[in-house]
Length: 549
Image (tube, rainbow, N blue to C red; front, side, top):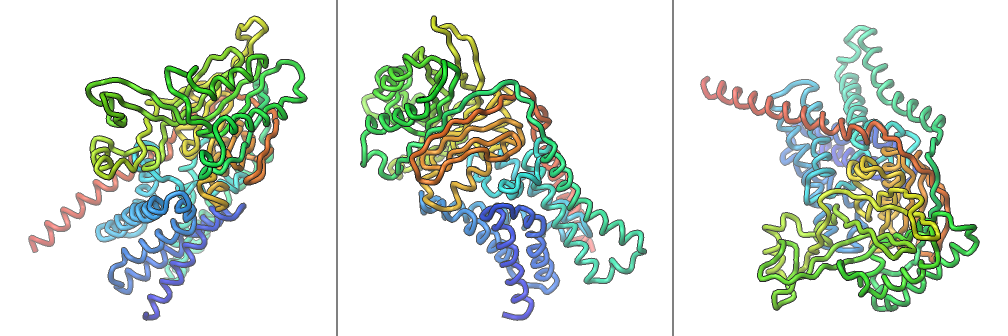
């Protein structure tokens, strides 16, 4: 390996470390504002020295970054973890490769501007319409454990953080390039001061603004709701082997008994149990479920107590042909549709149901079912076939009087597991009227790795974007209550059977991000398309000119 390649290898390693640490270690989000500079330097050196197969270099950086930060996915599914790492890195590398292609027809700073817009357009695609979606490493998520620096996400959303990261990295890179080439020193002192001063302002301005917002933020609640967060602590790999559903129900009710023991009066309480707590719910025939009967019987004499819990639910139909592409055949014209659902029940024994719509590819859903269900059938049905809702809906926490009449209603948005990673999805709950958000999840599939801590931290970003308090129940931890400032107010330990009660503030105001959506992503997508068309036209004209000479 020659000298240039050794330098490039060191720069690649530096970028991997600097971009990974914010996802692994608390309070290091600021490293992402410099972590892409080594990657840009590596690409510049490789281009200037004529290194062959440069795509292998930047693809290796992205593979390593994905592997270091999300290796824990392999604890749940080795094949899925490897595929997520390689496929996500490939898409990052394609975006970076298009930037390198643009440098053949564009000069100066324009290719780097194109890189910024194209990258954020790709992240927006991941967060909105992509069926095969793994947005875990969206750049703006780097600050999930450094929330005091991104309070302005209530205006821009997480992609505003991605834009900030790219601008700071490219600006610093251009200053370093100008200094190394002497061009920065050749301009007059006013130009030099403006360039350096602009970078300092871009770096420090959002930080100062956020810290001011953080320190001066004051709650303006439109009421409170008492949350009882339950963490039953079942090993998901042994859940159905080590104990029956009846035993699990008894443990959850015991936790509720302890949590409600010193409850005064019949005030409203929202008890939260984790995702897929039970698997015996048949849609349209709730009364056939032993879990349903046990819970409704328990709540019958507890007016004001609402229990929200996750369930793997099923819907059975009779039909000569498949009712949809996601059903599975049971033979004899019988079909079953599975869903990942959240239910909320109270003393009236009525149920409200929400079905998870942001489903995990492979494990829960078969993407592009018209194509992949046929392949899955040939493989013996190895992929999930859950179906979600077409749009977000809310679950109401209800207070009733002694006659059963509704006296108070609090609309609640319930994000099931993976859904809490999607900013606009969670904002949609608030647009529908949610005054508080909940997250029910089961993170134990990943073991004691950074995965469950990262997942918890992303909920803090949703709290800032929507300025809603979040109550979170995780099967084995970490369960928590998060304030609208993104602070964790109370939390449980990992892999412990625990419960806690906490008041959560309600809010009926909408943030700029909730009201207008992801303006940052939309503008960047529009600009990326314009620049892409411009580059394509310019490349075509340049080729015609070369051919005519």
